[in-house]
Length: 197
Image (tube, rainbow, N blue to C red; front, top):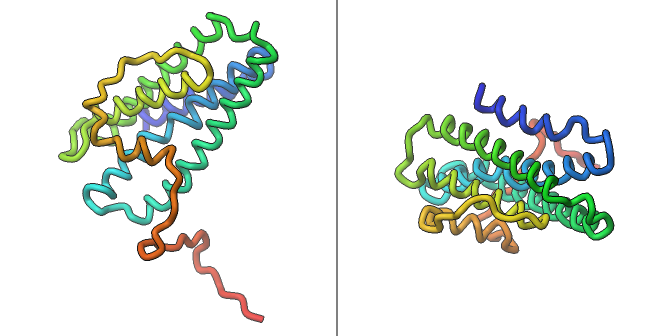
């Protein structure tokens, strides 16, 4: 699928040539942290969560997403912590040119993610979420990612477009407890046999 290929290409680009120098490694680590861990999957998480919230669909998929979104966030936060530690020790690597490269990469990633959103929606909006609302959410994720590593936000955010997404924005950072009476256990193996003494 060409839309998915766009994502694959920008992700692959940030994983190659990272070992040419320490500065290049930090640039690639930053792009990996921002785009792979903190942006690339979150728009799809939002769409599925809205199906669950508004249509009571994708219940089983949502439980997997709940775990995955927390894991991705932890990876991103650890990556940002590491990058900021490196920045304390080697501030000379974090130049205007460094952030310019980051911004260019974020712009390309944003465009690729928008193509995926258009493909998912088949260029039509749903009655409970529009493509523009999801794209606004991606812009917010990019801005948040840049802020985590000392960059400046790239996009003006239209908070009106994010009203239907507020529950998920809050949920991403919130502490989650399972509802004991409304929780389905996750079985990670198929055709598992029970083991007895």
